Length: 335
Image (cartoon, rainbow, N blue to C red; front, side, top):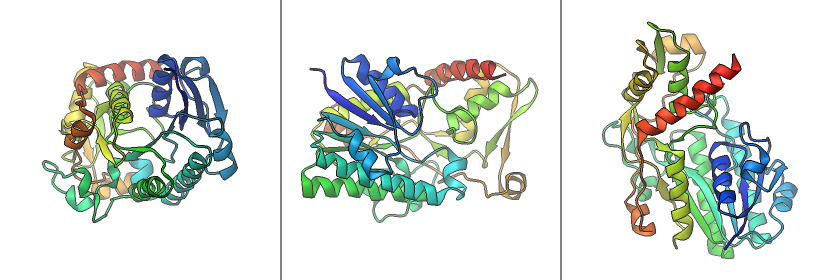
């Protein structure tokens, strides 16, 4: 049966894809963001698009009025490594996102939202469990004792507890996903807020034959990356499950940043090299310490599989190839 749905932060990458999928399933979709989507036309992905700052309590209350079956809360002040880990944006990252979640959760209770999805992050996991690039521990119950490596992670951890407190005290039906590096087309690919896959692909696209692309850090740090379409299937499975505690949504296929850069080079078909930049050389060039984050981070999906009865699929190389072609088309159009 079609539902009445709101996607907060639907002007962004994951939110835009999610809204488009929900609309394609016959649901009535309201998207709310401080900006229009950079790539989707309104009729493609929603029935109604509202411009508004959810850090304002009146706006949050207004946009959630109207009896929603599901609300997806993805609105946040965020970006790639340069934006989140340089330390230059910590105050805005924490205050803006915290205010958004405080006002959204209150509005959700006020207007009787039937089910609310909150997008948390793998950045909540403690730094001391992610020092070994080959054996990071990101099981859900390892988040405490808490020691995230960024203010972004601390804010996400606070907001998880906020939504769980409103579940306990007000009966709000919540679902919480800790995303692990979601990537794909129709997202930020330049300007400093892009994530590592988009950055690597863009660099390979823009690099001339015989040149080299720059990788921040020594490249031994590891991550796992999940293609957007696989992420959307996982969100759908979690929403259908009867489980409200935080759960990982990501790939379990661990890969080093240098290895991902090598895949980007292979996809490009060019004869180009990789230059690792870190330490004083990096700080001299950019004016801030190299923002590499933790040394290892990988999704652990046992709890997701137990609670949803489904597995998260992932094919990194196919997803990177599709994203490469899209970024290439965008790069050519911008010249």
